[in-house]
Length: 299
Image 1 (tube, rainbow, N blue to C red):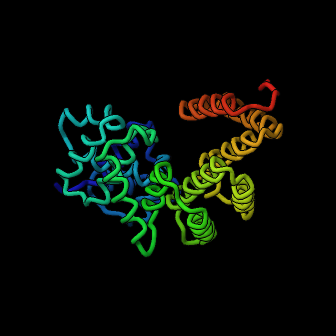
Image 2 (cartoon, rainbow, N blue to C red):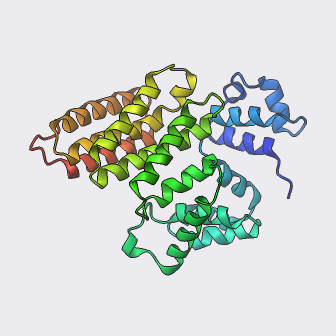
Image 3 (cartoon, rainbow, N blue to C red):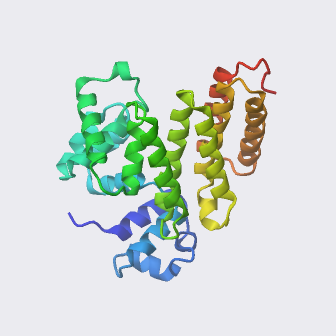
């Protein structure tokens, strides 16, 4: 089936309540976007991704799932969307009907596990796919955004040497600094770095975790531009990991940071109500309550 990418854009735009002008932004004129949606004209790939950014879609996974949604035109797919996070095998079955390669199906399978499922609850099939994805990943000469996302998934299931984590963190930081790295890759990189910080901290490498937080913060405040604004939600996860790292050391600074962070989330939500942000706030609050052994209660 030939994919009408303009129709995909139109479906997303209308479902999310964006006007042609809002979706077009500075990437294209509203009139030309309308023609693209109708299949009258074509656009450059870079323009297509800029439109997706205007529609608040940054994650390559989201884009992949949108393609699947467009291609699978039957009633069972809506059920698949409801259950894909608890039935990974079902997700793979759908992908195989579209002749998606094994690496990609492994990617979706791992993402569909309970995020993340406890190691002791993994099946033999789970471990087979996790090991295959990890082996493929570390045989690649260069990682694309999707590869960093896969690493962010498998890091929860394997004990990687500290030296390996340090090398991946260094590469990710270097790529963040590169001017040619686009916003989708930057989000994948920041997500990967957040997971490395979490792993450092959970393994008791508190200083390594804080050093990485400081390097990312330096990047964030240096040469601030519109791309950094688009990465704001990604940086929130870095700040959350910094707080958790302090609390694992029973430092009162962790509670001070948590209080400031909760105040920021509440202020932002009062101005721009966002269900995702509300969920992040709840997850953060519960985690802080669990880790807090300072004797100081949250306000």
